[in-house]
Amino acid sequence: MAEDSGQERTEDATAKRRQDFREKGQVAQSKEVATAALLAMSLLLWIFYARQFWSELLSLYISLLKMMAQFQATPIAVVNLFWEMGLVMAKLLWPVFLLTLVVGFFASFLQVGPLFSTKVFQPELSKFNPIKGMAKFVSKRSAVELIKSMAKISLIGFVAYQTVANEFETALTLPMLELNQSLVFLAQVAALVLGKTCGIIILLAVIDFAFSRYEMDQKMKMTKQEIKEEFKETEGDPQLKAKVRSMQQQMARKRMMAEVPKADVIITNPTHLSVAISYQRSEMSAPKIVAKGADHLAFRIREIAREHKVPIIENKPVARALYKQEIGDEVPEEMFTAVAELLAYVYSLKKR
Image (cartoon, rainbow, N blue to C red; front, side):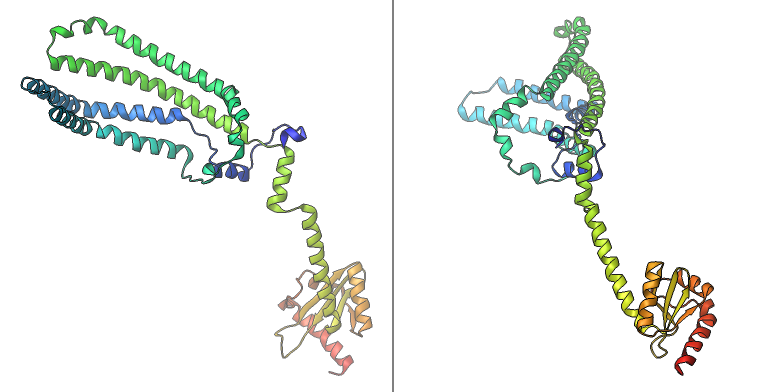
C-alpha cells in the first residue's frame, strides 16, 4: 500500500495493527536472549553441579581402566560397554537437557508473552517463489545477521583464546599432577571461559533485543492512508455513519410528530420553542413530554397542533424549563403546579 500510493510509513502502528502482526507470529524476539539465558543458567548449574559431575566422571574413568585389564573385545561385550557408558552419561547430562528445555521456553515466553498462532503454519504461495527465496540470501537482513554472527564468534573466540592462553604455562604442568588435580584445573578454566563468554552474550543479547524491538516498530509503521482505511474497517465509513445517524434522527422525528395530535396542550415560547404535553390519568402517574422542538421544528409542531385542534398556550418560563427535559420524561416535580394549571385551563375549554 505504501509503495503503491507513494506514501512513507511515518505513523506509529495502531493497536489493531500490532495485534494483527502478533496473530501472524511476527513479534520482536531475539535469539541472543535465549542464548544468553542458557549460558547464564549453565554457569549457575556448573557452579553447583560441577563437583558431582567430575566426581562421577572420575568414577567412570576409573571403572573403565579397571575393566580394560580384563576386557575381552567380543561383539556382545562392546555393546554392553557402550550401553553402560551411555546410561552413565545420560545420568550425568540429564540436568543439562532439562535446563535447556526450561530456559528455552521461558526465554521465549518472557519476550513475547503467551502466544499461539496457527497462521504461522498456513501455506503461502509466495514462500514457494524461488526468486524471492534466493533474494533472502542477499537481502539487507541476511547481511546484518551474517555480520552479527561473525562479530559474535570473533569476539567470543578472542576472549576464550586469551583466557586459555593466560593459563598455558600452568597447563604445561598437568602431566606432573594427579588426575583429580588436572580435572579440577580444567573445570576452573572451563568455568572462567564460560563466565566471560556469558557476560559478552548477555551484553549482546540486550543490544540485539533493543534492536529487534526497534526493527519491528519500523516494520509495523503505517502510512496515513492505511490508518484511514483501518479506521473505516473498525469504526465504519464516517460518511455512511453520518447518513445512518441522519436517517435515525428523521425516523425519531417522524415518531415524535405522530404524537403531537395526541397531546393535550402545546406550550410555547413564541419566538422559537414548542413542547407538547400529554396526560392520561389512568395510564400515567404524571404528565409526559411527548414532543419538543426549536425554530423550524417548533413551528411545524404548532402547525400540526392547529390542524388537529390541539390547544396552544404561550408560557415562556414553563416552555424553557420543559424543553430541557428529554422526550418521554415526566414533568419535573417542581413544574407540577404550573403544568397542572395549564392542563386545568385546557380541560375547562374542552369541558373535561
